[in-house]
Image 1: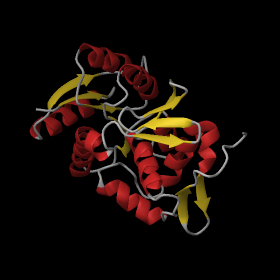
Image 2: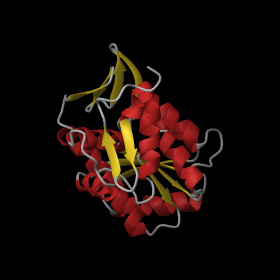
Image 3: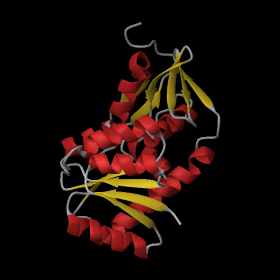
Image 4: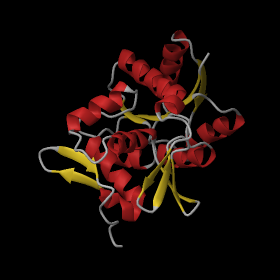
Length: 234
């Protein structure tokens, strides 16, 4: 039985979500604010976490940061009324696996939570366990989702960012169209909604630092990983 922590400061919504996910076979633990969500996470690691953004004591972003310090892989999803593009961008930058509007139907919400669990369960096989990718002077571990420089971790990727890098690296310098990249990611269970690919690419470039420029945008065609290109600033 998968276990989920649901954190929201609205009691009626918490109870409604408890009933929904209990009916789907989940063991549910509720939290009234971000601080309680982190406390319950530390007490017993769940399989997935569902967080509101605007909560007292500690908001969803702060709670996610605390959770990520302890576990870089557990699926964490924002369920929030703040669904503007800038809010989704901030959520992804904080390391969320998905960002869902509270206006979504129960069926879609449950489906996306279950997909997040499937991505988590299948991650090792999807990314070829233990495989390392060299990007300029950096090494990316597709299992731990870590970006390493001379043996020290300098950044942590989301599973979707790692999936993007894996697909582009596998293309061996060829251009991958945006549509093809999204299809490939969805085909192996990564979260990549239409219109958000550029956000994931932008975040990935930032995390790769100097080597980020090796991910090239090809106008009207798509993206490619050019390993022959010099790292930006070097």
